[in-house]
Amino acid sequence: MFPDAVAALRCPVCQASFLLKEDQQRTLACEGGHFYDAAKQGYFNLLTGKGTAFEADSAEMVAARYRFLEAGHYSALTEAVAEAAAETLQRPDALVLDAGTGTGHYLHAVLQSSSASAIGLDISKFALRRAARLNPQAANLVWDIWRPLPMADNTADVVTVIFAPRNPAEFARVLRPGGILIVVTPRPGHLAEIAARTGMLSIEEGKEERLAEAMSAHFNTAANVSLDLPLALNGPEVADLAYMGPAGHHLRPGQLAELAETDGSIATMAKFRISVFTVS
Image (tube, rainbow, N blue to C red; front, side, top):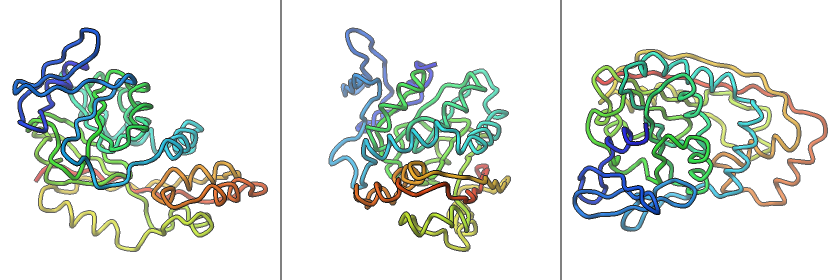
């Protein structure tokens, strides 16, 4: 499956296709003479030039996300994403792109119910270390989703974007006819009981409408599903939840320690929207 994923990739410098060399080290070698060696953890860094202007998640933030997701708090969401992708990935040469793959948690669930090839993109090398370990059959790449994707046209059957940036024009370009885009976003009221104390941003009203409008130039909305998950989190879990998201870039160790010392548990509701789009 890894060679099938490589066949869909294109060199970010010259857009030539890649050959996979597996001598002493795995290397992606393009026909134009550009080479990308795999890191010892198994991922490839395709970023060129100045890389990315965006701040990547730190090792500590990634570890917090890993602990929280592995504890199963979002298991119903994980299962829903895998179910939404399953039917479209039944073709023999199916390929899924996970844009913003993080630790590879959601992609892993998708691959558990499919024999599809896979590509996972993220700007955090710390996240990709875990993703490559969890999904070694996938091509896990350091990449900025806001840039043109290092993929050929019409190569993906499913694109998943779970709490990650969205690049509608590029997603539409790489999707095959009949392919789908699955986007997961929080809804108003998401984790409201703990958002204030953790510094997490509240979700504005009208977010779903803005998402549909942003996608409308390239996609049609096929489905919108709401998913509510009741949670009861102890102090360390609240700290991990705060640290694993965007707020984690601004939290200080002292703030995390204070969160982790919360007595008892905090009841809250995770509110998600799973949106499925088709190319217009």
